[in-house]
Length: 267
Image (tube, rainbow, N blue to C red):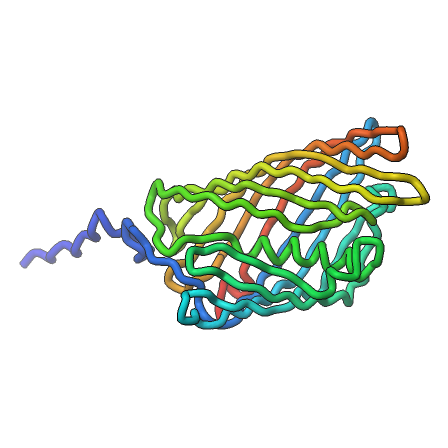
């Protein structure tokens, strides 16, 4: 008697079990840990410098309230910033730096994160470290709508405070997202971002102004089953000008960012 052939998997349902979509996405309640790394190469004339940031980010998402808003709390631990003092006056953060963060995820996906430590200002080591920590933590919580389908698009505009060395700056970013598909149990989302940076202040008794613009592209892997981010890999380029008194300098910056869920995204 001939052996029956094994059943063929449905062509509309990939082996990873997610199917062809659409997929529902809601941030899962509980704590999630991420390793976030950022590398930047700054070129100014013939000089080239590197700035590297790394941290362990732990974020705890609470169940949605009556209006659909979810509270977030967490910490950015083991923050390390390695850079030359010549790069906009950047100083290295001590390995023990730990910054508490909190915020919300709105029902339609908008994310807000802040830290009381940032109130210390960019001129202090604690304030500058908090600004860096917030930037790394925000990489782990992108805006995601409740329904994802292949070809779906959405946009997000943010305006946040940051630091360029000892100077406070405002970073405005406009991001466009598009769902590319699903593979390996994750939904692939492409994010393209344009940004501007503006800031001014005083350093060494002189007026200093910083301005710049850039663009970046990243691939996000989302786990709709667990309601979590699995990974982000991205690259970007930007041009900045710094004016100190009457003298101006221009430099180029190339960045790479990687966010990885620790322990495969287990809670």
